[in-house]
Image (cartoon, rainbow, N blue to C red; front, side, top):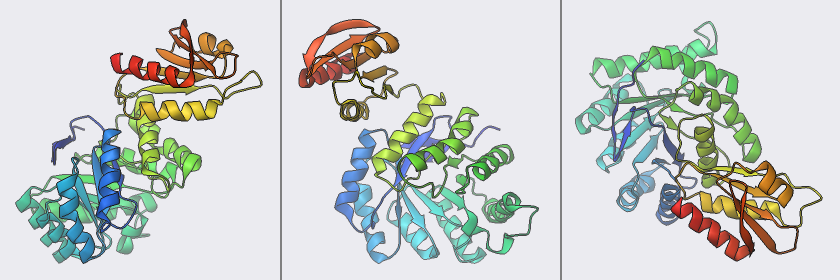
Length: 345
């Protein structure tokens, strides 16, 4: 089903491109660190940033954050329809509401009417906490989600508002797959895909991949957030990796790293982190290898566009491209040359 497309600030949602999203990880009133974090993430490929609104101080901060960042700002609203309206007055580009706690149909209508007047899109974010009256009403929990969502959408449709984004999140990868596959066939609205409460680090990334990779491969998803209890740049790294591997984006580098063994005379883990830090800001279809020794370097990674490997001598590194040696260098110069190669690639 073709998605309805519309602008969210300076981005377009629903045109086939997957937009990357994250969320502020501290109180929104703390403007300085959030602006710094958002601008760093933008340079890594972030497309939009969401901020929670808990109180008056957070509301006041929204306008200042909006003024100082260059990606669309989303206000995340729970329990207070008046805050949703005031966030729109502050100039946010999108609102996220939870239909289970917005405060009833009359308050929902007031939010939708204001959004329609200002052309501000709304994401309806349904999760297990949104089901309230509908919990247990369907054949299973998946049907409960759609009963709650359809009741909310009826208000939007009655008011003639279609700048809608849908999300149906669960902490279960299997349930998340079922929800989004069903929603993709039912509704024409863009879908924000994600697995909620996935955890931290490798565990959270693995659970997220179980749910999100199949969806992305199937063409499902217009915005994406990998929700980790971790540094926000790690969310973005996992999301970009999923998009690359699922074939939804080609302008994301691929990094391959050997697991190290007894032949290795360099710190591969530290070297890989340094190369990953470089690749965070590269937006090209390029394959980069970090290998522990020449055996794996020029051999197993010979298809890499550029690679760096231990040479077998302490402190000396081999640069190679498509299996061809580019020379031996000390670490600092090797990384400098790798960066230059990527810039010109």
